[in-house]
Amino acid sequence: MRLTSLPLDDREALGRELAERHAVVIRGFLDAGERAWVRRQLDDAEFDQHVIEATGKTELLMRPNGLSALLLFKVCDPRVFDLVESVTGCEPIGDFRGRIYRMLPGSSHVSPWHDDAVQGRLAAFSVNLSPEPFEGARLQVRRAEDREVLADIGDLAFGDAALIQISGEYQHRNSPLLGAAPKTSYAGFFYPWERSPLAGAGA
Image 1 (spheres, rainbow, N blue to C red):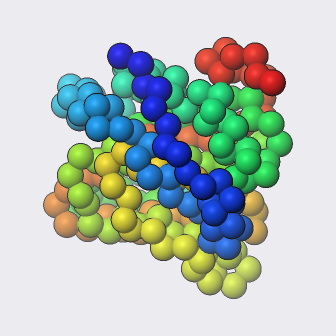
Image 2: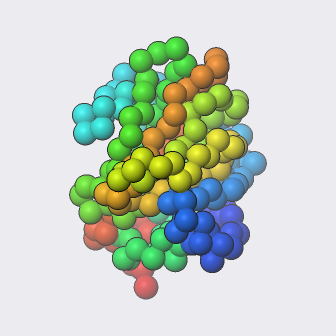
């Protein structure tokens, strides 16, 4: 199976929204066939407890498998790189690195406020892999100086993606997870490194 579909978004509108809220939603990043395949793969996935030392985030980290490999292939599509560059105005993207993680309600899994402004990261990207709707875990962005919340996104459907601006002036997090359903996501960062072989030679 090849994950190749891409949504047709108004890039100018996305760019304006990113400039205002510092996060935008890309609807339908995974199509219906891809979502069905992801659902089946998650049934057999294995997860381990994981702590991100830099931010203090706690979660379950999925062991690498065919799902993580194919999602990396999809995000490294040159059209995705081009979309992110045009919406964010960032320098040319060379690579993407991501992980699949899960947060469970009623556990110690938390997502503190952080900015991810390290290692030359250009933008953050997250795809909702949760087949069932979850409560809470809203994507929130705030200004670091006065802590004013600029974005509060809680309507990500299965297969939607979120693009988040990275800057030391802004912080983001997922609000506490509520209810009974887990939250599963593919999340990572675009980098200005040597062009990934998955993205081809580039322009």
